[in-house]
Image (cartoon, rainbow, N blue to C red):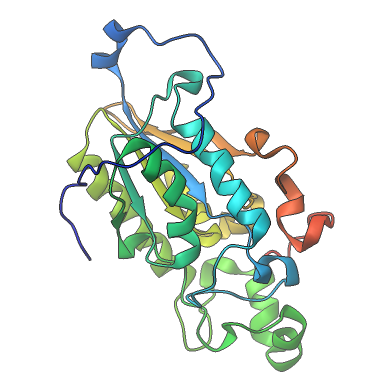
Length: 259
């Protein structure tokens, strides 16, 4: 894992930052908490077809690329007092790096690829449709749906191990950027497990929350503990496949197919 400090680079601007609030008082900057902006990557073809992705390296589709631009427009400006990030971290997978690219372009920050933000290893289920997996692995699939705290993907990673990984990653980045804002581009499973961990819950909480493609969640550290201040915000994605439209081509959100 490359763990060096993010490097600045000179690049032309493309996305146009938008502000959802008035300008931030510079005098308040010194008192800001550590803030992690947690972004799930934009939509891919596999999101539309409800196939297990895991660590299969697939690109964003057309909607996903538009979602990445919308994320940039929000995070490059000072909406709701977040301010632009001072560092960008991303999963190694193309879909996360593509989602981070517009923000990197406008801020001049070089994204740091961090294995701690990698998607969960789904083992033998990678690249396979949910219906096919359910038919071949009925007991394991039932456990995936009903007992996530004890679930291990056949030939892959457990949700508990994945949660330990993402929480260690958050603590590491906090130690490097106390009092600053950073952007973390990751995947649905790591984002869910990170938010559950912040709330002092384990993988048993996995199905009790929703994290859509291109969504933004915000976690802060106030010097004593983590605080979840925003979860699964998709307001910036209106007209770009936001919300439930990010999965299954706009079908109503259903628990099991949300791989």
